[in-house]
Length: 190
Length: 190
Image (cartoon, rainbow over all chains, first blue to last red; front, side, top):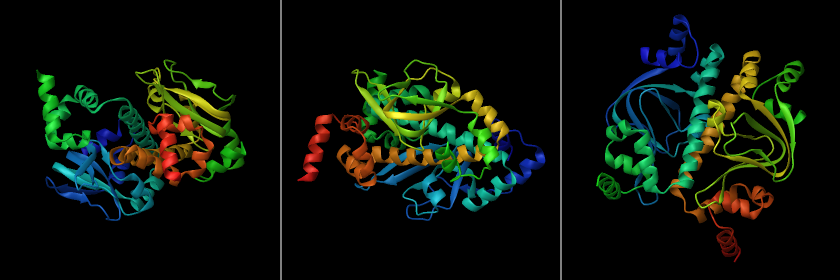
């Protein structure tokens, strides 16, 4: 609870009473490592905020291989935003990479939250603005960089993240085979 | 002015007086075809909303080739959101594809606008939420589809857009050479 309060206070100012009310719109859930919070073809009901641990979002590609498209660690949101907003079936899975403590909110509760606490419009506006900025950057990298360059870029920016995530998931996120990732790492070490 | 009002009313409800005040925070600008609104290495001061015409965002890649990453037609925003928020130098260019009428707002005016009209937090939250959803989808396509599949997908979803945009810009957006785009189009016609 304190984690989320500290996070909110980076963007907006809320009193203790307001925070208690805001927090009441969310559900808390504990997930085990490798447990799915959301599975392909489920109607997408929730979006998730990580209090502790790590989640990933992935889809199964044509070849039956899991393709990770996003990770979320402490203080990050993870969702299929399109399906959430449209209340549609999702084409993604959300799974715990590590045992995790997660807050979740459904679309209707979010609307009620925003109605009661319009300051949360500002919070979510800032969150989405940043998420969109990051996505714009990522799209540029996907145009501009080779897979190897993207790995070097990524590991320079987020060395602690590279340490934290299992290598086969990192390979999946980067669009590598695990073998190719090992090769690049060996090459960079030498 | 009426265009923007109709657009706003799809997301929020504003009175005539409120709208007049909201509109006063923006500057109006007319741009000629191929004119730049923003150039690489400029400090990014504005974000842009297209009232009429078409803009594109591009960068110059290592080979000196223009790489288009986004288009914006009527009722779309276009910006380097990261540089805008950080008030940094941009690494993108924004240029008119067609003669255009554009509204623009700087970061400070946006803050004043949001302070005076908090309902605009809701508007921008929804705009960024949708933009982020679209970016999530696009990132998935970049993982999942070959360039040819992406072209087919894109032209099925937006046939009117394919007609409107010069072919060499469409090729640049899709990461093709213009020659390769002609080949795919010929193949699909046959």
